[in-house]
Length: 282
Image 1 (tube, rainbow, N blue to C red):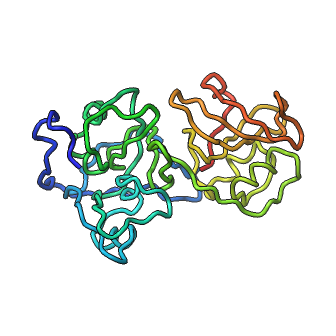
Image 2: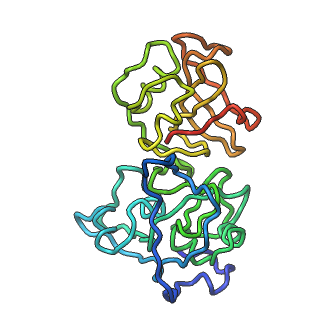
């Protein structure tokens, strides 16, 4: 789990910090838009009083049972150990158990974990507590590292809302429900990709999903993106996110190349197009 020795002795296993404070993720309320991102620069609060634990999985143990037994957080454990949603460790596996809930922060191009820690102003040992890393090598462009929610910067994704996809990027598990929108419209197609339990025209979806689904302003694979362009707005499904921040959507009833009523097309949304984006429903 340790990074390369060039990271100095501070990256060796360390004693517990002197102050304990576990900060939970924001919870839904009825009068604000439920957000899955850190919306404001967080006040730097003490991190959990103990370092991460490393355990060997025995027969019958799951992520949830280990989290309950050792007072860890199941979602941060999945991110730390590279486990996708629904995956479980096998007996004999070594598991890293972070001490509290995590948030996800994108790395910069060719950034090493040690440099990532310096940029965020956190002890590099904390990065080791929340990510099972073997070497201090540059991370892939567009990938994420996990940090405690309590010290996450503006724009970080709250880990418990997202699952791990290939390439260490966040994604949302498809949760298709009943189709209740007119065939051929953008809302119909979006409802075939995600479980949509609200109604209304596309432009109203971001407000309509308030308190029902987590929302934010960071593109994530599997999210629904709401646009405020046109008379009735537009919604689409985010297929994947590129390292440069652009993202590919699939959609119906968009009158571009290959699109139109009842037709599904793909297009890439670039940063220049973000002015038409209201937000993302996770």
